[in-house]
Length: 409
Image (cartoon, rainbow, N blue to C red):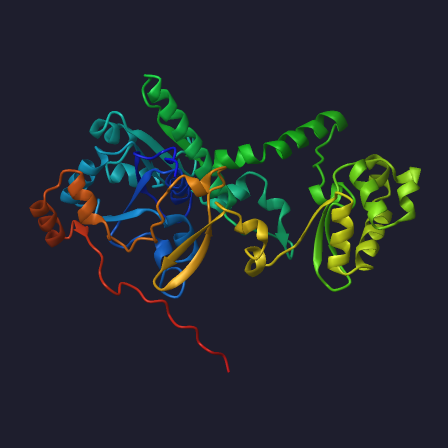
């Protein structure tokens, strides 16, 4: 097998929930050794589902080592600093006030390890709100995403924590850039990513679009939602009650669809352009809806595929990994944990199946504490004293058990 791109790099994670753990998950998938440093209480995602780890923890913490340190204790902090001195990068999403309280600011960490790439994922980057707390839904609310996503008229979060994951991916980009700079002989550049600033960047298309309309029309007017701005671009129900999502972006797609469904509108010049179809939106939507409703899913899919149309079935989560595409080499990783088996999607890389990144199950809290600290120069006797003092902790057998499913009569 080939060596993974970040093999030999050590990354320390001080992360909870999603943003920082997602960033270090990517680094781990690229071959870095990731050491997840947790408090005695552990990452909250360890206890979110029936008293045990959630899907978030299993999906994004497999492959990492767990070290349990009480950073609020002077002896625990000193042990962490020894570990920090061996690292290439530190990734954390502590609140700014918490980072200062624990003496883990950039200046303090770089004093311990001048070559360290310091990465802080926070609610807000530099500015008047730098110390304010933010979460994924706060970023959605403050950058225009949530206002348009309403459930029963109430602005609501999207569901998946995309802003956390975007922020984690942006952090990885920053870390890799800093590594390239170090290879070129320049000082490692710290990385700072705000959830708010991430949300701004992700929303930039829509933010610029409303400015464009304001200047062209003299009033603020939003771009219509992507599905409704292009008739035929959306989900439609087949005769056997399966939803099919159509990709209808341009005039060529419209023509292919009409031909695939043998519709007379294939020769209708009044609907040939997107501009014309937008003016006749209701007519076009009714036409597409009726055309799909006239066929069973398999028949509609065969017609669309033969015509070269883009489409897919709208799948529930429990069926997503049934697709043959998902089971091609390098796309899923078999992970076992507490007697349960999981197929965990890989970070998408061209040669993911050949890069030799070891499969490690999600670590129990403190499973690698002594091993990792001793590699950082803490002697066995010192480790024993730290454990006795409660400054560090190791795995406790039976530290959790998933509550059994209760049968409903």
